[in-house]
Image (tube, rainbow, N blue to C red; front, top):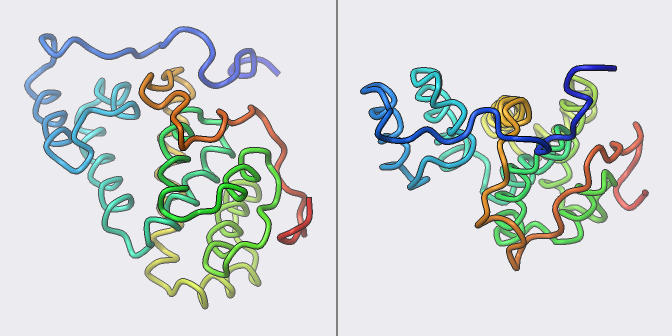
Length: 215
């Protein structure tokens, strides 16, 4: 298979590196400033390549701001889902940024390590199990099985479940952009004390039918 398979995500030169702010158009400046003035506080890595399409970036960042900071999912659960997406796409920037946040928010380090290795996390609480299962099935199977859906609906409720579906899609979009652009991991996120080792690339998914504690 040719194309993107010749290099792993993050390998090779950055195809869409940071633009000199002095060269920004008025639209780029306006959309970038909205990110800088928001809860992120800076034009962080995913938006560096997207700045080439400032209106798209603006719409994307507003959706992301809701999903990351104001959704019906608690931070612990949204960060767990982001890690599943990062693992599915072997996306090093998403992993480096969100693994420490997930651990700080209360996701067990053993669960984070299992996701990194493509294994089933052991002994997840019911709400984390629901988020993990929905996210894995979406990324692996492109759908959600009836038993998984029913369990997630009971654990999360409709609004949080819909937000979880959208969160998977949003971070998949960012993963696609950064993988294709070869966006590098920010230096500040490399080797942080709370971060597990950078995720091994192309780890297998858990086998269909696997249950927590196996694998």
